[in-house]
Image (cartoon, rainbow, N blue to C red):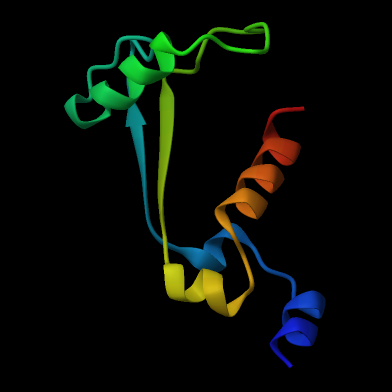
Length: 90
């Protein structure tokens, strides 16, 4: 029954986000946000398979997703990532 309900229900990001925040980082390739430094360093160390089309935005949107709500709606991180990429990266 869960499959039918999730197949016809319209879900927005707001339905599965428990917290959100906006940060301004004037140097996103180096970062001024201490907790982001390990991830930024890893990102810079791994070569990209795609050519960089533009400079990273200094605005950072951070979402904390509610795992229980995601499970109830049949969502995975991959599905959310694909939808965000489809909507905002084109």
